[in-house]
Each structure stands twice: as structure tokens, then as C-alpha cells.
Image: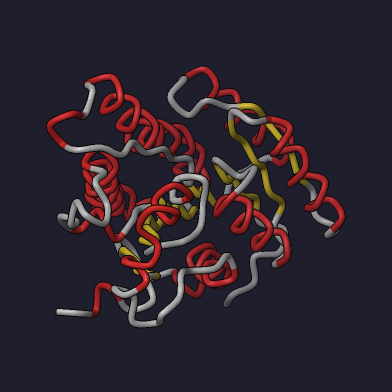
Length: 253
């Protein structure tokens, strides 16, 4: 049920961070993986690692807020592999600062990447999956998307709002696409070391750690099995679900 060998996956933002981890996880499980982001050289490094695993892989430059780039990745994937079975919408960005000081252009950037990028990639890939009458779309949300965060720990209103939008988008797409045998789910990570969280951890890491029942930050390995599960037939009747991976933060009252 967890077999994804020969499946074809696209991972946005797959050149580094959690995207890289999930791309390698799918490759280790036997899937062919297309990695894309604005950082082509980083994607090429991941592609080379995937090729060493014995699976096929492409590295493509892509700005997820650019419709032409998105269409190009989808078309190149279909041209090379003939189908798309899995999409992981991982590309994301953030901006930190007091709510009253958030510049409109920073708000727009976060929404463009995190929400519009997820929407456009899902839209283009869904066209392929509808023809196939099968597919898995996995969005990367965040536990911050479920509600407010203490500004003393995380003052990131645009990011939190965008991830809340991703959660609702996931659920709505799950309902819209279910009749085509397409499952749309999301992973909501807690605090993982990434480029986005680097500065946050440097400033508030000790305070954040006190809020995590597991008493540690997340690690890449904590997401690998989750990505494979949601990509496989083991999750065939799981649709519109937000799978929380946060070491127990959201379990606290």
C-alpha cells in the first residue's frame, strides 16, 4: 500500500530545506521526481542525488508566482514522464515584524508565493490528474495557520494568514477534485530548522522549545514517512486532511 515505485512527482521548492527532504524521500521510495525552484543550481544538486538512487529526475527553474513557469514545469514533466501522480506544493516565504509595520508589498509577496503559487500549481497539475482520473496533491501548511501566535515568539502575520488560506484551499480542492479520484491533503509542520525559521530560532529558539512537548525541533526525517504515506495508496481514502507534525504543540489545551 505504501509502494510508490515508478510514480511521477513534482516537488516545488525542492532544492533545499524540507522540499529537498521530501523529494529525496520520494526518490528513496522509488518515485521519479521533478524538483523545481528559482534556485536552479540547488535543484540540480538534488536531481543528481536522486539519479544516484537509480530513479529518473529533472531539475527545472521555476518561480511559482509566474504562470508561464508553472505551465512549463507541468508540460516538461508530462513530456518526459507521460503523467503526474504526485504534487507537493512546498515553495514558501515569510516576513517577520509587528503587524502595524507590515509593508503592503511584503504582505503581497507572502500571499503570492504561499497561496497563489499553491493555487496555480494545483490548477495546472489537476488538469493532468483529471485526465488520468488519479492523483495526489500535498500542500505544505503550518501549525501557525490554525490561529494566532504570541508576537513575543512569532510575529509573522502575513505567513500565518497565508498558511490559514492554504489549509482552507486544501479542504476545498479536496471536495472539488474527489470525484476524479484525486486526494488533496496538507502537512502542517511545527517548528523545523529551515531558511525561513533560521532567524526566528536564533532570536526565540529557547522560548519556542519550551512550548514543544517533544522537547526538540522537528528534523527532516520526521517528514519523510508522512510524505510517502500521503503519496501512496495507503492514503486513498484520506482527503481534505491536515496532518499535523509538530511534536505535540497542537495537542496542548
